Image (tube, one colour):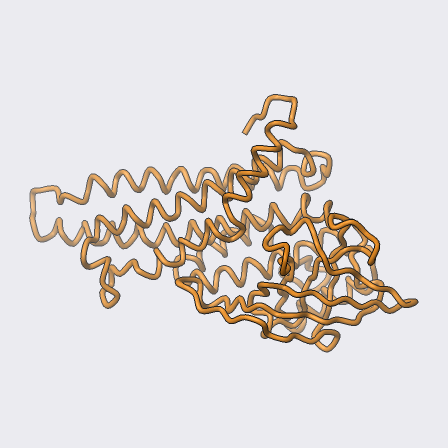
Length: 338
């Protein structure tokens, strides 16, 4: 959030570091923070020209408002680039009704950014992104969030019914907002959360091995070799995130790069790689800690880490992303340099 609008002026790199730090303690807290920041980035990057949206950003900073998003939809699932609901206009006022299968922390949010078709006759991929504030929408819960992990995000399903002013629609088509901001910032901040889970798991494994070493002076505990191995995996995971984040930040003012097929491929690989490696790292840390990592009542417990990490491949489904990447690789003609 720019300091001119009352924000702290943090860079995206700062936000990624915060997600990583929070992820080492509570992945649900870190994910809520990440998802809020994704929505803030969409408005900061694509809404500063509109007076209402600048004023709204000032309200976010002044009153510490929490932003959520509604992109999934019944009948479409997690395919964020299509919608069945549509914006209906009546002069300067608009309305929409969306059956969202998931709105994380929706009941606690102060505003929700909603994807929708631009108008009732629009194609499913002709989408806009709408900012609706509390008081301008109603939520009817349709499903509860009783999950293996990430329980604190409270990602219930809701039917969202909203009535809002026409200028609450962000000016760019959602396809551009997604390519330039929502998708890359999501994959970067989510990857930072998963890196946080993996980092804490490795720290617990290292602490366990050091404790074992103190019991057997002059010898190397059996788990030490596996800790060295898992540290290498963690380093690769961190390097992938850092390198991709740097590439994104360097091209923030180059929309042609951010909307290119090669950049989409790169972001897809970050998400898939980070989500798969997080589970792999936690699994290896669990093997190091053994039964003390398997139990829930020890300082080496890794049950929560493993449950939370398994959400990563499902949040948007890796199979869907890999299928999309396969199509992109067939379509792109130039060499893909990652």
